[in-house]
Length: 163
Image (tube, rainbow, N blue to C red; front, top):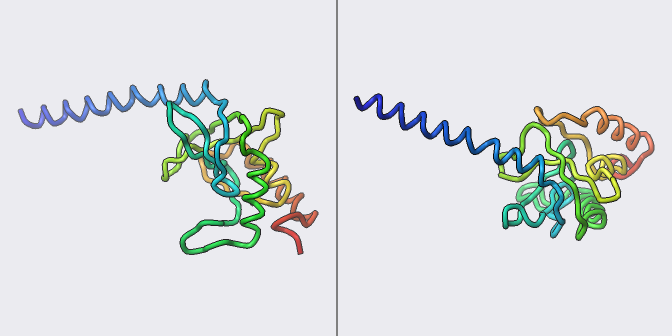
């Protein structure tokens, strides 16, 4: 009898969890315009407000040099990438586009970010040499675009690729 109760409890928890996931995903697909209230570094921002609280958003598909890493410290061009990101997005309303996974292991939202004028922030950072491509499946929607932009930035010697 105890085993049946245990399985029933597990089934109830799983059913509850499965019922809450679509709500989160449907929110992400319908409420994507937010305001940037802070810039953490070159590839992470803070937005206001999702369900009444601030959220950190990590740009999908790109990686900028570190500025606050506990072991790596400030990497070359890290401050420049953070400042470029700050000039580009701080105080602006943005549109978030999500891929397969909504959050990373640190709880940050994962998104492709667009300014009101249509500028694709993730792509702009790669194109201008402030970021390099970092693909983490299953979020791979713009991988080919990012690789093309990185190759062009490297060939032109922009940012990270300057001699």
